[in-house]
Every structure is written in structure tokens, then in C-alpha cells.
Image (cartoon, rainbow, N blue to C red; front, side):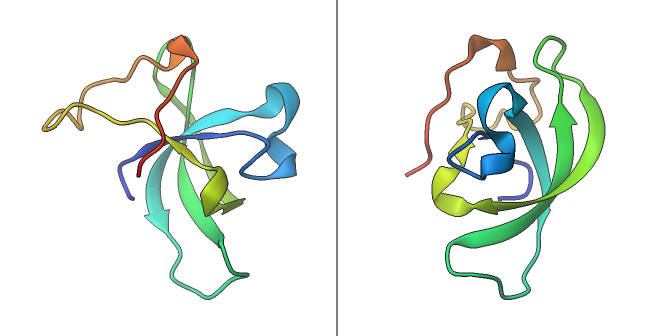
Amino acid sequence: MPGDLVFLGRRASVQFGGDRGLWLRVMSVCDKPTYHGWVWLTGYVIDRATGEATGRREVFVQLAGLHVELLARGSRTRRPDVSRGTVNRRV
């Protein structure tokens, strides 16, 4: 999961409901035990307009609520178009 771009909305945690959702480039996943289905993520908030990192965050979210942006094979380093507003969920 490190390196993934995920959208955090209300399904991930109530703190990201409404217009408070954000894109996060995951840098690490904490391996300490938490509540079932929840995880601590550390990453960089990605600006929707520019695709650039704007700040570092540590968040506590539900795994089932994460929307992971799927990138073309071998293109992990390309800057994603986060302005589209649609993402695919990893299966």
C-alpha cells in the first residue's frame, strides 16, 4: 500500500465527510494492532488542482472506505489526474 494514492471520504472516516475529503499519497502503514478493519496511514496530502504534495498527515481510517487510484502498470511515478473526481477501488 505504500506509494498508493487513496481518496479519503466519509466512508473512510467521519472526519472526511462533506467537502473535507482529501487525496493522500500513502508513505507508510502502521503495523500496530488497532480495531478490526481500521488502520493508521501516514502520507502526503495531494492538491487536487496541481497534483503536488501540500502537507504530511497521519490518519486513522477504515480500510473498507478507502478508494485507491489504480495507475497503469509500471507508471507509479507519474502524477495522477486527481481533478477527475472518479477513482477505482482496488479488488
